[in-house]
Length: 360
Image 1 (cartoon, rainbow, N blue to C red):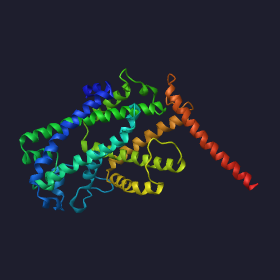
Image 2: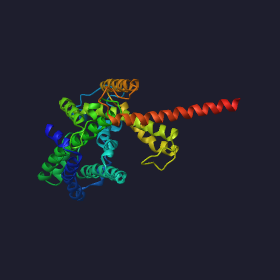
Image 3: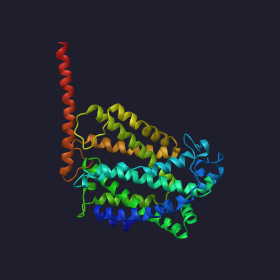
Image 4: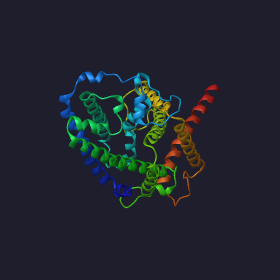
């Protein structure tokens, strides 16, 4: 962990090159599985429904997380809580790339790169799973940790099974690097805006947020002993809250500031955007409803801490959480925020004055 954090501290350019190499190594065994396994697929296996009796699957998963609003929710023989949590966790966090956009010299290709990334991730899950399900007769209970390595071994050979295990391990390094980078730059952005102490906005000689990387490393080490299923569920729930807030902010700005200059704009009307976002919002709320009571409690505490930080920042007239050494970037952000607030208040005042004039 410390070595990987040091690599992250050396700069985003090094992390980016390392991530590309990891992507090639991690995806290679699944490309081979799709090519070789496609000749062994029996399409009838794709339509076999899971066993309605989920006891064997629960025993195989050794899942000790219980409780919540919908404990062991399993219509049609599918354990929806672990299934959706893993699916949600594996396909989310695309918005985290926004934390790194300011580090780019040219953002013109950002949208195109994000769309290609979404397509690559979806295809990287869909086709290997399609081939894996269609090429072997397996029970639902067989699908536990490491089963893809078993499939690649039986479909292609032991060498690909070993490669799959290695790819899974090295892909975790890529996930670690991406998560640590985005979290550190997010902390720096919050410090720039006065929501966190100024120390988190300090950069190293490589341009990286030193103290944000340090805090992220400490948290990762401390949480490393926790159960992965519990961590995934807690992360998903809090990420779901963040998504809902992002959607709310999106519609608020669409309605209140339709003419605000935007680097990117969805080519739909507000109603069209509402229809476009509706399935995503419903799915997010449904995943959150499957959480356990422990996750609800954890999220409640996290939200309270976040609100206290926000309230402390609002009460500070200088817009900084702690009295710092005069961070100019903080002052710039506060100045812009004050100008926007003044414009809103001025607009409301003009409208009220016009209303009084018309009445008179």
